[in-house]
Length: 88
Image (cartoon, rainbow, N blue to C red; front, top):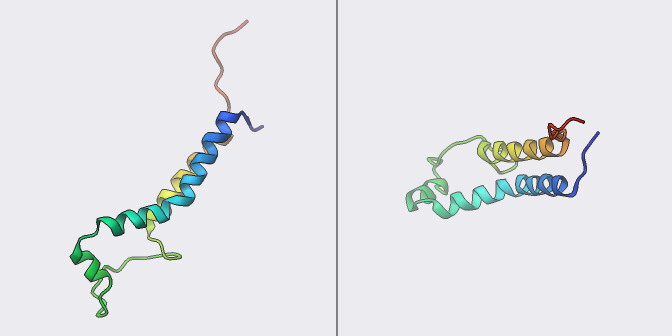
């Protein structure tokens, strides 16, 4: 049974939004912090740029970060509430 308290749903939703935004945010950060040499090598026609595996235009770091954030969102949403420890 899911515990759908508003704060839990809000936290889970924010983690899912962060997971969706992570690949684009990471690529923007990498492009903004790239040195001129890295920019030149990545756009070189001779193929000397860094070769990396990409899926749908994003690298492994993009997808692994998004996966971790989505998994955390699922954990928050499906976690059982802690008992307060008080027994009657």
